[in-house]
Every structure is written in structure tokens, then in C-alpha cells.
Length: 152
Image (cartoon, rainbow, N blue to C red; front, side, top):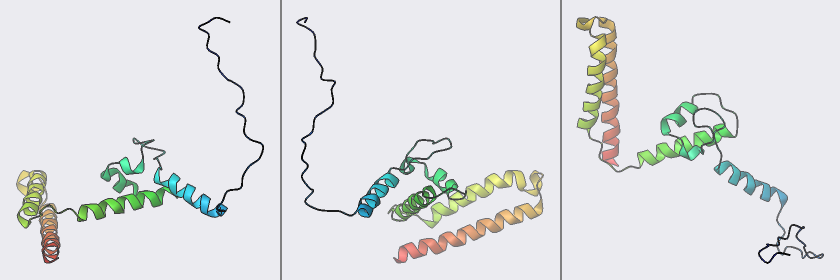
């Protein structure tokens, strides 16, 4: 044998012939339940542009879209749980949401839509009325939400 040759053990690993019983006997169903929980926590998306990504790594907009389509179980449940968890986490954010900020955002959206839907820009009067009605409705909802947050 050459002095630099490496000997590797490629044979099967030997175990002792006697096995000692496990001190705590657990039910098979409990083991399966734990295994399924661990498996579902690490569930991956099997389709789409995020194929192979873990559910908790998906963008919120994609999760929101996934909740609107028909997805099989148990994937549908995990998607819904992750989306609801993120919504709950966002509601716990302590950053100040002011009525002025919300009004600026809504007004910016109205201005963008008015460029194409205003009657002076070639749009229809009814479309512009619908846009203004929707903006007013959003402002009312924002006022109610902000007043609830300030009261809490």
C-alpha cells in the first residue's frame, strides 16, 4: 500500500444487537401531528413566479392575490394564516397615521385619475362623479379609522 493512500470505511455501520426501550412511550398520532406541524411551517409555494419560496418570504401583495384564487388545502390555510398574521402585525405598527397624510394620498390619486377621466380632458362626467364619490368615501373611512386609533 502506498504511504499516502487513504483508507475509507465503505461498509455498513454496525449497531448493537440489543435495543433499549425508550423511557417515554409517545403515541403515534402525536408524533404525526408534530411532524405535520413542522412540515406546514416550512411550506413552499409549488407554482408561480415565487415557486419554491417559503410562504413567509412572499410579498404581501402576492399573498393577498393568493387569497383570492382557488388553492388546495393545506396550502390555502397556510396562505390565509400568513396573510392574516401580516395584517395583524401591520395594525400594531405605532407609526403616526394622520388625516392630513391620508388626505394627501387620496387627493394624489384623484388628480391622477382626473387627468384621464375629467370632462375637460376628454372623459365622462359620470366617471368623474364616481371618482369623487369614491374619494369622499375613502376619506370618511380614514377619519373613522384614525379616530378609533386615537381613542384607543
